[in-house]
Length: 370
Image (cartoon, rainbow, N blue to C red; front, side, top):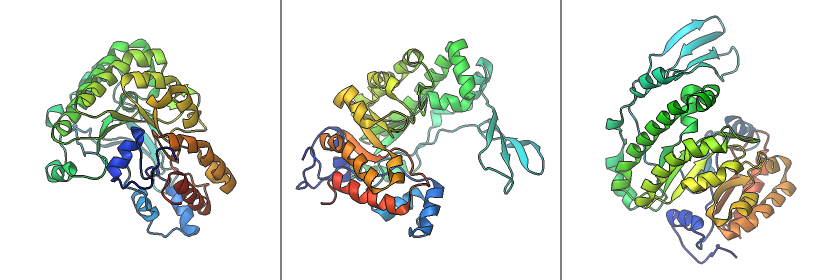
């Protein structure tokens, strides 16, 4: 039925690419996005073996295909800031980390481990000019590349490159408030930051594209929340779309047509512009936030490729809700251009028995078991 043809025998690479080209597959790839640490700890009490304590081991234990983020490793030399404790008492410390961000966190055993961000290194044109000098774009390194490239040329799995992004990257340097203020008040500064980022990404991808045939580029932004984007579509189109296009056009010239964007929240208003920019695949499609893959495919057609989109709330509720959720996305699975998995990391309020039931039912939908 649909694109699933059990008589085929495909490699992981062929299966991955065929799904996104709406071609027949023996089954749709069986993958998941991951788990919160607290989830695995709960499942240990409910029957999951103790040695399964991270995403990699969980992928192996549950028998998933190799996670699709097989990527060429990249290291961009960066002159780090000196780590420095600026203030502390018996419970807390304020420090500057090696990226230049000033944070406050609690000492071990004194409170939450999530730090508070107090100050960012890029505040204006002067601090940006100083910061970008810390990057050495002429000496980008690819650890293990020479040892692995012969294997990559003969591989049976998909291989890609992390292309990064713009908004998420700049937010880490300026903070959300600082970046949003700069977009409105200092757009030329933001343009310069994004121009530099484009130069960086093009430098990163050049050598792998020249020496190994890649299958995809992986992007990350996380620039939306439940009600929509953190930037107006107008500013997005002006500041980001031209930069994306320069990179996606270069990738396509070297045979890479699949660009996969990782962005949480409600992505609907930005999708037409991402498609215009050449970013054609999106995940994790958080249903609660409004990024329902069935709805999005109906709006944007087969040009839009998707991953994720299984509402995690169904796994919390139990078998009946899981069956209903999988039936809801089944036509999308059969049409192609879609790999189903939970719409973010599996939260700790999902019982282990519910997750096992979900995997069994999903594997029937994707044609892995009868």
